[in-house]
Image (cartoon, rainbow, N blue to C red):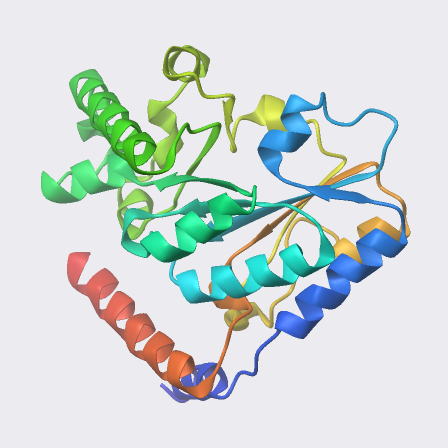
Length: 263
């Protein structure tokens, strides 16, 4: 219990890390990196012979933080990709980011949504029929997104609590054929895409002292002149203030209780 209280206090008093993010971009630019979005990187043949830093933001909880990161990037003349869940898809933010030439797409959680609705708790219950229904649901979601914001180029799966419960990620409902039929370049968790990066790095939460995942940090990768780096960030790991921290603590407790009750 004392460990939980300590963790909650830490969350409550965490300060903004946006200046750290700004400095990271400066360091990449100073070292000659092309800083860009996933779709731009792909459509330009991965920028052969050039050092590239690809920026991906999964907007799980904080569209306001996503907007602040966008403003930092816009000021520096770089581009990135933002993936919004339906619950974080704030229309004014999405439209502004799109207007400035950034990539915006869907952070879908279709399989988790279906399993939650139909009280599916195990892999064995995710039958071929369930997969077909989820694919049809996702096609409708893609159509809805495109009717609002234009063509989807790339798409990204979100990891929801129900995915952990069932033990299956949302991206299993996609394959290369699905992407071709929908006119989508790729799903971000496609191993063929991830293998194109010499370093793929993800941020982490305050629970792990914001340590970078997958064996290195962006600064180390840039210092070592890695030819192609992809950095995945989550705006809620960077945009902190006392009010947002308080809301985050309440959300964290809600998720904890929800997870315990659903076991």
